[in-house]
Image (cartoon, rainbow, N blue to C red):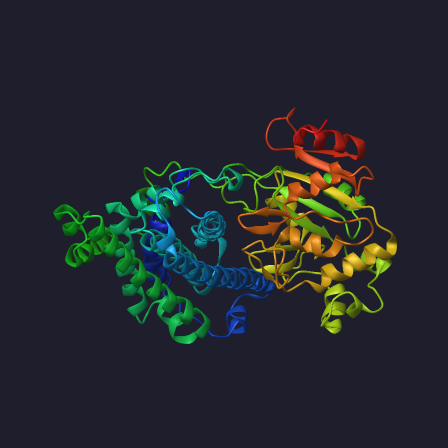
Length: 546
């Protein structure tokens, strides 16, 4: 089983088998052909259910499209990491057990940190699509969900095998990969744990069996998977990528086994093609129509999968209304989401930064600067104005916050985040004039659509991480002059750095508007709101500030 650094977690293998086996059973039980035209699907229903069905299909398509883009972004970033690792290995002639150049130390930490962050995001995808039959309603959307989840799982395994093989002949590199990096919250023993997980016989066997089942399903001309592969070029590319990832993974694991002299007779027998085919056939024959029986069979003895580790706090509708009444466009929201599935940025009490932009009526009270090109060279003014007037997300939720996530700099909904992503939150109001807030908002809107910065390098403005959006909007405006902090060889600004900046400056560059955390006096995960000075007091307690 692949370990998630300090937690033992199977890398999608149980998930893969569950999906493959249940998909095979499900596709045949439905006996439903895939319509290329969604309108045909909709009009086949009774008129009373048309609107709801149409909305469900639209919501499902939006989710699939979003995660397909997210998966593509992560795949490209993993390829970038691959190039960096291979380049680093070429420089390894200067490494010794007793001497490791400081700049190379930072690079190793940076690679591990980014790998962990991408890994966490892939796990979010795997976790969601594990229950693809519950999230999607048609054979087409369910099968597309399966494809995305399976691809995310194979990305996890493939690039783990890449990291292990890249440094397998580099004692100094392996030693560095096994070191603890407290500032990045990476515990000791990473390389050894990844090596052990990859060479688990159950792990290797499951990968091979899953691949056989997947190919069988893809070759079946009556399957939905076959139809999607034949008719949808976008998903065809994802499926072809799955084949490439499997081939690379299989070759690397075989190389590792031979290199470490782990290909013992018992292991070789269990990995023989004839044995794998027989096992796949036996597993398929055991599958009935009951998905839960399959899950019970395949998820046995994996009780350490607890996703998420901590549930988000629950905001009441009244609390949400109160928050909306307090917030103004330009307010900064810093959040923390517990559990290894959360967005990983830099260690601290807060890990993510968001800008509240409100609805269109609230924005218009502030407005955009008259000549935005004076703020950002090359800005697309028409796009800026269109974004400024965007009221809703595709899902129909209010587009009232801007944040940088794996997909890039995007609109999101505050209510959605309150329901799903927050264990702790503080709202800061910049002490700026109306004109300065207008400038900051203009820059924030101008950054929409930028790609995510997985390297967290604030010297490069072409890619942006969450707090970098805040930095670009506020720095050099009014009295703001943030001090960037060098971490892992790059200049960064974490959410906690923003709070440290607030504490250090006597003029107090922000007002603390609201602090939210779990209500420790109540059962469950009820949220508690602290406003104004009470919020500041709670924040100081959390940050150990006198």
